[in-house]
Image (cartoon, rainbow, N blue to C red; front, side):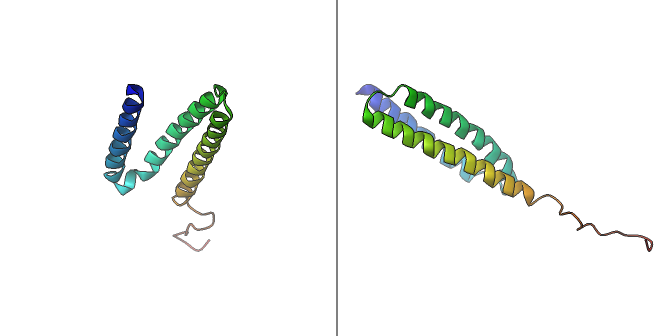
Length: 103
């Protein structure tokens, strides 16, 4: 029972700390932070796969499968969002204006 309370305490502490840190990030740092969080989502996905590999009962397998599916969607979705955000800062082809003489 003590392990359950310790795990719950760690989870709540991590959630509160994460919320406090993310809420204070300046707008200019959101893209690099998103890339870093995608890395963390990948590690969470690996942990979910390890947990699924050790599952023995039907309920554990179902929860593990659900965790792997959600973790994969979260990681892939994060990379898609990051790519879209980075694309907003790239110059579009043909949008450069030429200055100078009449070429």
